[in-house]
Image (cartoon, rainbow, N blue to C red; front, side, top):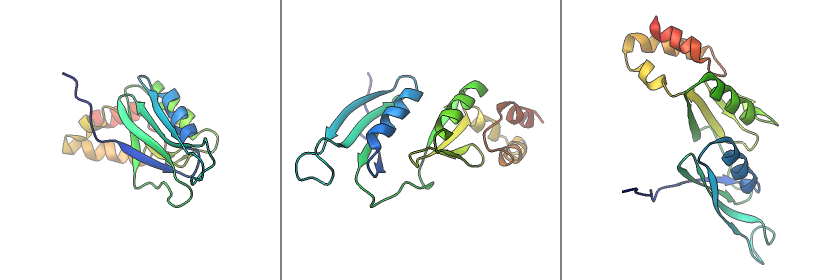
Length: 158
């Protein structure tokens, strides 16, 4: 039996939540816009502007709220994309840092909408499980902006 989660993440945007959601679903397989609720007459935003865009990213349920300039996205919350290959890391990194996005350190970046992401290899938890390997892996990761999967694998092997 498939159980649908009743927990979802809501991301606050000034006025470009629908554009952000459409961009994000274009990047990940098994992703889609679920629904868009629009503002009506006399609302916070002009009539017809998206108020809440519900979407799924590779099975994760999220919502993008256009709520105006009252709250800003920060690095205190980020989306984590687990990648199996360097090609997948490279593709997501390029797309998410394009058009005003900004790279950070250790696989972190901020996209053009201001949302923070961690683009990391799916094998990272396993590589960090052994304390002896963890120190080497962490040392390698701390030198990186975009993750270099081969360098992490090399550090894990010692």
